[in-house]
Length: 477
Image 1 (tube, rainbow, N blue to C red):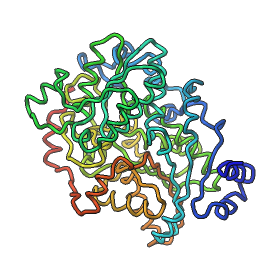
Image 2 (cartoon, rainbow, N blue to C red; image 1 turned 90 degrees about the horizontal axis):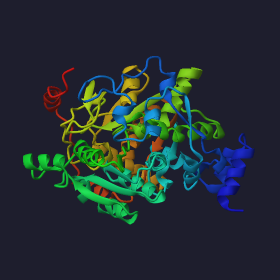
Image 3 (cartoon, rainbow, N blue to C red; image 1 turned 90 degrees about the vertical axis):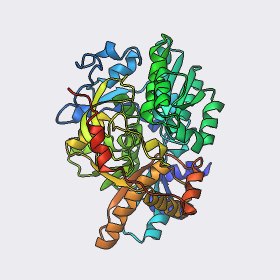
Image 4 (cartoon, rainbow, N blue to C red; image 1 turned 135 degrees about the horizontal axis):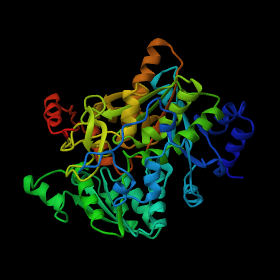
């Protein structure tokens, strides 16, 4: 019998005895595993349980609430219906669950060695999404989006990517469904992270640094600034422009939209069952945020427990101080892209013309936050913190030296917030239980770790005056 199967049997059939037995069996790396048949059968839609519904998206031309037909040029109707759904649970197609079996359920791990390093009485657990073929949580929605597009006869998907994790995931998903894929990768990340673009190409997709001369949107940016480092807003404009111009092509987004957050809730649903297996329940759930999908994926199912069962778990979203859309941005209707091609959505935003600093957490450099997550934040249901990138890398290195897993720079922001809370527990003596989402590994981010270890990494906090200036360019409604 394989070792992992033996550990599972200990957990699953003797839950009250499993933690001690597992600790003796495999040392301090305590893993809580689920069998394949425990992959969730439905996605959880938190909108069904919120006290007030989120504001609707608006058509960019009429400024009236956008209907399904307004979104049809970019998305398949199956995803549009999910985007606007108020159903609590939405069935996961068998074809999608079958592909999920390649890496799901993902492990929940007790970070016992790191607890000892920190000297904290807190119990720290993490859900490890880096075991997917693409090395992050992103395939959870990439596979679903490719499936629904393929089902409706679409043969090509376009998208943008920041750090490259989403571009890798969508290229993998398109390969699985025999579809073409075109990825516009933010230029600064295109050169910072060459191996992510290599992965994209290995899985058969075309990857272009953005802004580019292949679209009118890209050419307009280059005319203003030939040396533009790019942004997710610009890359979105390019991908949307290509998709809108072809009947056989749709656009796919790796975060922000309701259906993307919906698909990621497999993470939190599994985590709830695994925490029960561990005989624990989190006092705090923590995740990094750029567009909001990996945080929502782990946090929204726990938010559902807070809303439906009266649980009191703190839900903490962690963003870079260089891109503080939640902690310093404005909650307002704004465009999702720089060229104003997308519907307007009400979200925490730094302005659609935001150009981020050259930080290494490329997946956290978007100007806005997911509308559904922004809504829950302003309802007071979730919290937000910001972290400087040197603090994030310091926490990531500390974690890696204890647990052996090198986290992606994005996940290191969550780890920094976990360390803050664990240090508070050390001072107070509180034995809190902390759960965080390790959204991906950092194997292709080693240049960033070199910069940190060599003392060349600089902190950057986005200036208040630039935020105020950007707010003047928000749409006038």
